[in-house]
Amino acid sequence: MAVILPRFIVLGPIDKLNYLSYIRDGKNTDGYLRFFEDQAENPYAKFEVELSDTNGLVHIRSCQNNKYWVRTKNLSLTGSTSSQYWITATADKKEEDQSKESCTLFEFISVNSAENTVRIRHVQSQCYLCLWRWSNPTYTRSVLANYKTYDGQSGDIITIINWSTLLILPRYVAFKGNNDRYLCLRSIQGHPYLQFVSGDIGDSTVACEIIPTNDGNIRIKQVSNKKFWRRSPNWIWADTDDTSSNNKDTLFRPLKIDDKTISLMNLGNNRFCKRLTTEGKTDCLNAAVESAAGLSRLTVEEAIITREIYGINYSIENARVYDETVLVVARTSASNYTQESSTLQVNLSYTDTSTRTVEMSKLGENWFKLGT
Image (cartoon, rainbow, N blue to C red; front, top):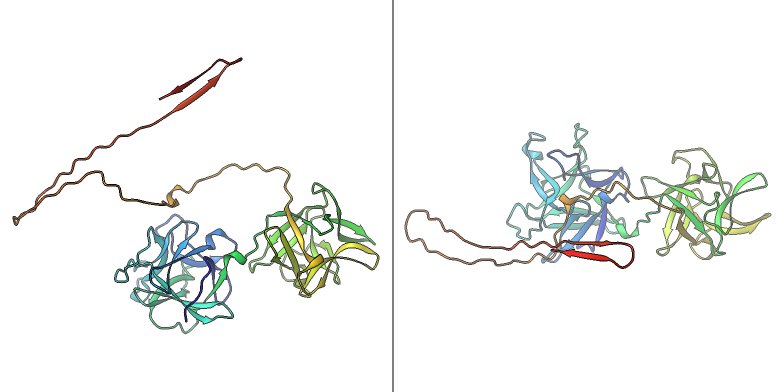
């Protein structure tokens, strides 16, 4: 069955331990695909699906190194001919020719549409991509394509996640309710409640720190008292030092409403948090409702007054070249009717032009401009 793929995807194995990325240790296996990324939101786990000229087939490109998936032969890693073909994100260009080993076409075959699971087949070889486990910690959970049959341990079953559905929050945020007030820490009846009462994002009790978990959920720490949010019993208090993800009352699942608005579901009772007034509390956060509507909707703002950006490194070696065109700069021809090899010389010329401009000013209106 043909699979309708989103433009950008994240891929996870059936054991749900991590996500697909590529090795980037500066050695000769750079670009080899491997399931080892802990978070789905990591940019190294993001891949783009590019449609082929052939219906149902696609090319897959890493959004980080801009290389296409290709089946690569490397016998040196294992020494076994049964595990010599690896899937790597190393091809500079797409290859549609299915007769070539450098073909970059892949086919996604549905396993369970409800769970978004698929098998992926390399078109030229007809081999299925499979998570491969072995004793070498550097290469275990790499992706190989050596067999045309299904894997007996389901290592060839892969889950597709639509990148656009992932909600990536800044590290420091402020939440604003539909009463146009920021959520902040307040002591009420001796407990650290979260109340929609502040009108100032610069209030020291407003900022929250987002700590993502590996499965896409989050934990939230109130910056002012360094305590994590916790449901008790349905009120949300900032009162725990527990740094693990074992207590569901401290876990939240963000649901994207639009580009600026979310709702937060507490996993302790699977209810969305809303602004609630009851029991002597006014406009406090409570995990109370089953739907993400009305008072459960929160506007997210980044709790940063100023930011300094420095130490930027441009990955020039992974740059993409767009809109390439063939430019004819010279033509010549020759015929060789002998049995001997012949040499043809092609002469061409080019002009290298550079322009520089320097502007300087002095007091008053005196200035000059130097151009070359």
